[in-house]
Amino acid sequence: MVSFFKQKGQMKKREKRMIDEKGQYKGKTTELIDSSISANLEKAKQKTGNSPDIIIRKLKISQNPEIKMTILYVQGLIDNPSVTDFLIESIMKNPHLKEKLLPQEALEVISKDVVSLGGVETVTDWEQLFLSLLSGDSIIFVDGINIALVASTKGGERRSVQEPSTNSVVRGSREGFTESNVTNIALVRRIINSPDLWIESMKIGTVTKTDVSIMYINGIAKEGIVEEVKKRLKGINIDSILESGYIEQLIEDQVMTPFPTLDYTERPDKVAGNLLEGRVAIFVNGTPFVLVAPALFIQFFQSVEDYFARFDIASSIRFLRIFIFFISLIAPSVYVAATTYHQEMIPTKLLVILAAQRDSVPFPAVFEAFIMEVTFELLREASLRMPKAIGATMSIVGALVIGQAAVQAGIVSPATVIIVSITAIASFATPAYAMAISARLLRFVFIICAGTMGLYGMILFFFVVLVHLCSLRSFGVPYMTPLAPLNPEGLGDTFFRRPMWALKYRPKFLSSDNNLKREGDNQRPLPPTSRGMKTFNMKKGDGTES
Image (cartoon, rainbow, N blue to C red; front, side, top):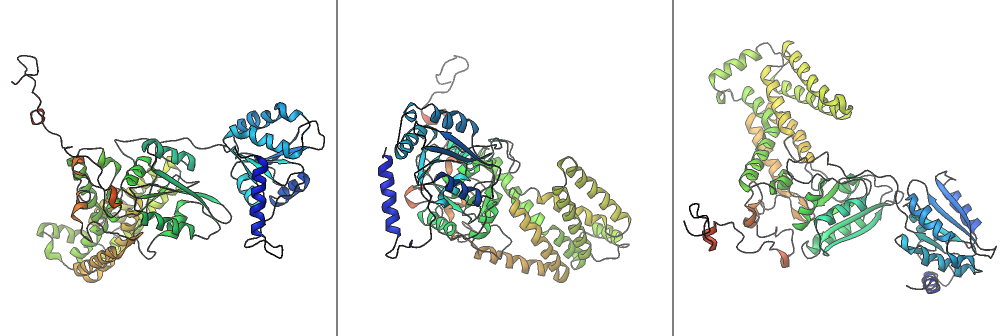
């Protein structure tokens, strides 16, 4: 361990290099800590507005009455046993501090004694001191020394690890992220036990000083993508980061798009799976939602459960999700176009029934669908904002009552209520909430296009959306990869999922070229006889050939 005096000498050299010929600090002005405890405490009280949660503990050490020591910490941000049982008690019972010591010697003894708490650092400026203090560390002042010690005592009340409320699965882990970066990173480390799992931390927000960490697997993630993530994060200049949504809006490639270009999740196993494919995870302290970059269009229809089930079941369910997504996107507009412009597409018997239903409705089909869609969106938002005990009940009862009342009043036809209800149910089947919201927004545009130009307007707008999707990028990676540009090797995990033994390679557009292969050869399951093994003979009861 480097001695205290050596550390102090190195600090003075760094401070000297920062001072120019006129005695002014180069670059940003740094306010240094005073050697007087009373001056330091007055500065701390003034800067924090004399807040009652800033606790000051004055201790008497050594036989020298001139040596005074003070511990400063924020109540609620520290681990109380660490401060009371380890920090304060160890200092008071330290036999070396009972002797007559100089202030420098006393500070050096303390710095060695509190290392057991998890680390001790020295600070000389107020900016770094407040950053450590408000992060949960304890600050130790010794009178006569213009250097303070920072002891790691972070703690406080935190939410325990619980099952995630989003991305629910039937088979898989029940652990979900919390609001603590330390806990979230540890949850991923438990899954990926590799020294190549690298983490880099930074603080973003001139006021909030929010802890932001990026995680990637060295050797698997492409260096260009990792560097681009770092560059965009370091380029953020904002006063506050309260949630990962702030980061998402400041680093995304395209702003004018309804489609999400970054994915987020609160499942550690999903983050681990994306890291193993070469993606980068962004952790923001204070939120359980972790960002994953880059994000592709097909990624929002994948679930972690797809990789825990057999490939035929997973493939059929994934294809069903994509099909349901298109239903939630265009079902009302197809109904509007067919009943308004293309009645020849509807079977005669069904057309007669629809015509009879719409005979008493005073509004056109496009207005009907638009009104009902807006009504269901109001019910959906109201159910989300209501207390959980009555939110689900209100949404169900409200939909039944309003739908039935609207039909009886002759405002809308029963067929419109059925179509809109199916569309609302289909929108919940999309695994990614961000992609489901995109479908909800575009649905209204499709309805307007269908009401004005019929199927031709729908097809025209569909191609506009398709061209827009092909033009998007997520950290430089084409959004529609591996479909556009076409990459045959990556098609095994898109609309359908190949068997696990056939997914030998990581996505080429995400992973490093030196580490594309993730499975060994001859992984395909084979019958025992194909592996040179003998089958079990039921008559003989041994492993001989039957």
